Amino acid sequence: MPSTTSGTTDFSLDVDELIEDAFEPLGGEHISGGEARKARRKLNLILIKLRNKGIPVSKMDNESVTLVPGQREYELDESIDAVLQLNYKQSDTETPLTRYGEKEYHQIPTKDQSPGRSSVYTTERNRDNIRLLLWPAPAEADSVEMLVSRKIEDITAQYQRVDLPSRFLPLISDWMAYEAAYMRAGVDPNMIQLLKMRLDETMNDTFEEDRERVDFIIRPQGISGR
Image 1 (cartoon, rainbow, N blue to C red):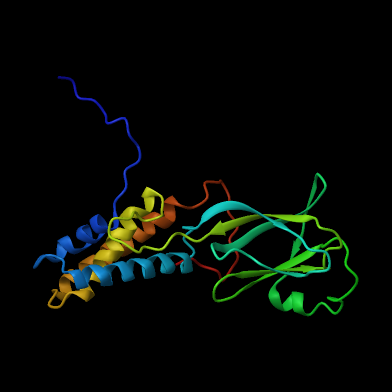
Image 2 (cartoon, rainbow, N blue to C red):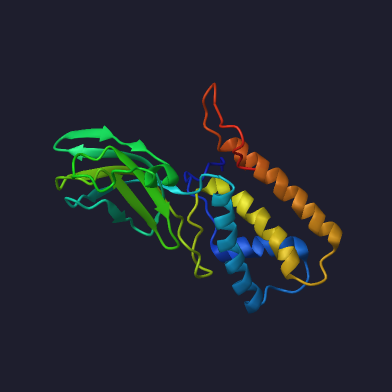
């Protein structure tokens, strides 16, 4: 019988499979319930660390906010991790707004001037969500159209899948294996070092694979994802 391909391209791993894969190199006893709970907590921390390292694990999306005349500040949905671009929409026309840093925005001396068509915005990252600030305050009930990145979903159960594209699974697996080596007592230090080397290699590969594919890239000096 001739061999055939599967015809599918949606390979993924459940959380329990990722945890099992991470503990496998360590040997020893099967994963206990306590280890599984700690591993889920570690996985959530790993996902946060990925964002902090600049790996674009967030999901791009579009968000619209209806404006209130005279109101400068708007609380955004807690799922939004960052506002990447913002346009002021008036009738059928969209105009890009200038982005200010928080300090630059708060130094505007005329923030309480009469409402008009907003031309500047900034965002404040608070504990639970992002606050959008406009200047001047809108005069009409127009809207702003935003390109945003949304947070990946939390891991709360073993049967769930990690809310990431499959290209990140090798990195998540190797990172979890390295963390698991510290969770389980008696692991050989040489094994920990081996897992660290494997994690560093996989992380470098992931960064390289996820770079924007253009001929020439300008990167601001002093900002690094590594």
